[in-house]
Length: 314
Image (cartoon, rainbow, N blue to C red; front, side, top):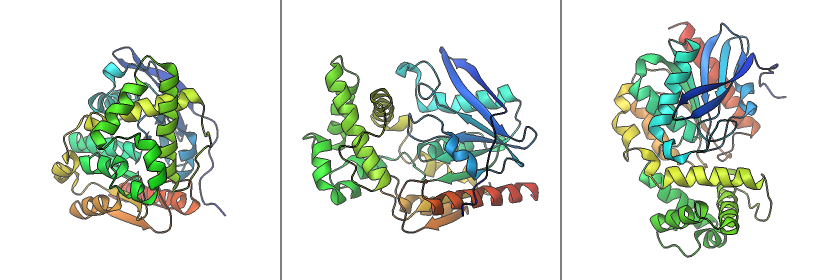
């Protein structure tokens, strides 16, 4: 039986102007006077999902969901102003608008990267963090995901050949997809988005779903464009930036949840980071990147409960 929490309707839904013409779609759930928690979704470009609500106790947490710039129900999709610095600035804008002196950060995959970067820059504003399937945004992570010698390509060589489209390097692969996804040829754009999302889904779920269309064409295109936009620019951060500034996270209550067999986000660097900052690490075996697995989901729920206890008795 699932131990995840049940939530009612949102406390409120609204849009927040954060500059450069961008409006963030925001929803609040749980307890209005509970411990504030800001959820940072993955992707990049995934948009927020209510599926994460079950991890957080609605009697204890005030849960803020939002879609990052240009995705989900946030508008517009203006890539000229979509970068990591602005996504971090938006977290600050949400806190300021809601009057939150401090907040817990929860992050999935790319969202975990944002949470770590924000906490390194604004440690005094963060109560603690719950992070799963964490992506650290290093050059090595991109070579793992999209290089011919990366684990996904070695496990799925047939699918990788179709995905790589003859590219010999990670840089040329990203250049190819960037040209196609942001070009004028609509048919080429849609086909590139489809191939990109099929590869992404394959390594996310660790199952061959070739030929299955799991989302609408417009959503595929938006997701592919966001991912290629960020990865073509090395996530708009210095390589090893999170590791270099990790000392800022010492003694901050942090729970990592990660699968050893995650094909999307490497386990070893997260293990090393957790050790270096003395964070808690819940290690999962036999599951991949997708937290839809009930074992994974309940591990996140447990970590969120433990963090709350730590904060309340600190």
